[in-house]
Amino acid sequence: MNINQQSEIEELFKRISKTMAKNTKQKISDEDLNKVRAYVVQSQRPLQAVRLLQKEREEREIDEKFTAQKEDII
Image 1 (cartoon, rainbow, N blue to C red):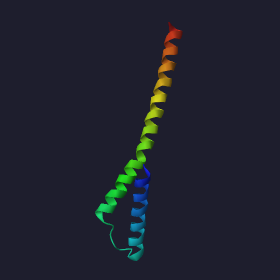
Image 2 (cartoon, helix red, strand yellow; image 1 turned 60 degrees about the horizontal axis):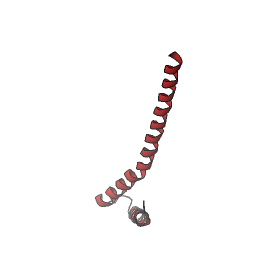
Image 3 (cartoon, rainbow, N blue to C red; image 1 turned 90 degrees about the vertical axis):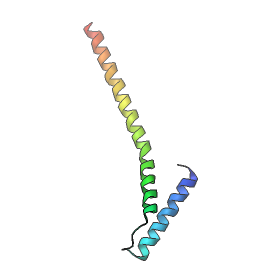
Image 4 (cartoon, rainbow, N blue to C red; image 1 turned 180 degrees about the horizontal axis):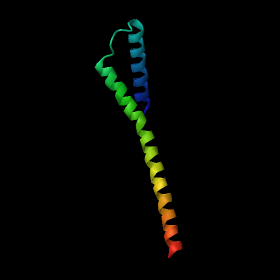
């Protein structure tokens, strides 16, 4: 996320906070909710990439153990 996106997100949350402070029963606009959803999805992408790398590492370790076992048997 770049600085402009970070700034936009901060402004969005400030706007939502002001809206909720004025009237707790007032709904948040669909546009603002969509922006929040997009931010959440974007913020989770690095986590998914890290999980993928962890799984790939686990797979390599299992392959190496399997290969070592095969060699021991042969």
